[in-house]
Length: 445
Image (tube, rainbow, N blue to C red; front, side, top):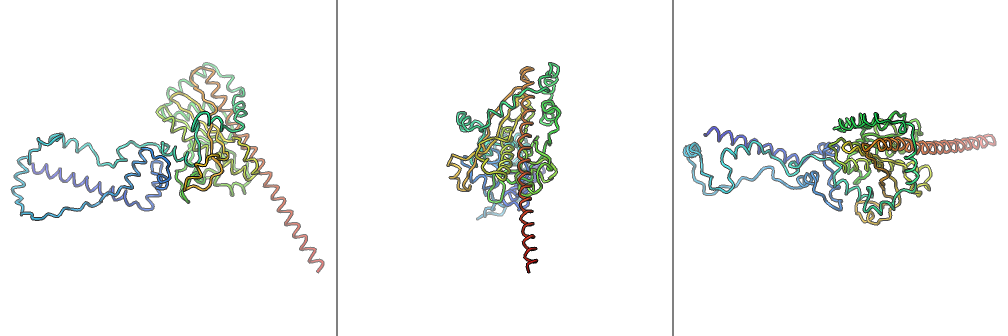
């Protein structure tokens, strides 16, 4: 019996040591740990993120922040024993061998065997560890985006969302519905093949490699999948620190870097060059986020929302450089899509910037005066497994959306390059004029 008690005591001491080490690391993280924690997908947001929220949601990350802010003693103070008598260890061992004190009368005491079984299966965890790991795109992320002027679809009401649609909403909608040879030639066999793909698309990777490939068809548009946007300026930041980790986009379209003048790619790189590998497509304005059958519809919407805001900001910055007067047209130049394999639903959104009419954003103490807000508008939603017609329509609007987005990029790149050439020509002319004047002065001297 004494050996069993000794083993239990040793196990409990080991658990306590591990708990103390964990709490010490959590309470006093090093600078390197904080940086790694911030950039990991499962890390937590910085303190300023939580301090500036207008509403605090009960999520795994908020519980983790509660644990971080709660001071737990790493070395419990041992009580001082006063008036203690000398203990006869022989009697203590004998008492333990006989089973120790009888605890059967204690309320809710499970008994020795049950207690030992519980001790083996219940790990030492903090409050945040009890909850399952969740995505960074939770209600807290949602609230923070709204607090900083990024307005999601149908917010705060459907009527206001419709009123805040982009000026070119109807034109985009008509463009996306234009007939295509690729969709009109589809047969029931193609539809049944797609249904088979949908049945097998349990994971996100499977969805991207089968269903999305079928929907996209063959295209020469510069595009990449599963890419981390690690070169862009943070969409929302506290001072110099980003409040959100950069997104890892399922799919985006952009233009080849050679399509845009290098001087612009350098000066506006933090807005239009998404990756540190600068040979990848720039000026992204078309995005797709997909989920397998176990995916969360709100999470995938928030991912597309975040992607779209970053893309719309880049377009906005380039348009501001080309001609600031065009910023007041309230037109959209960016599209973000979601696809959920569970229902085979394709949803198309537009993202655009418009002058903010809500003084709420100016009342946020941590934010500078905001002139523009990002608006997400719902354009089309198609369940592609209803019938052949809905399947063909989903393919049609998706492929047309990609082409429309490319047309916007091409127009912007062409206008920007023309202005660069014009400025370079003017600069060369001024330099030549200065040289001529110097030459004339020298001749007269």
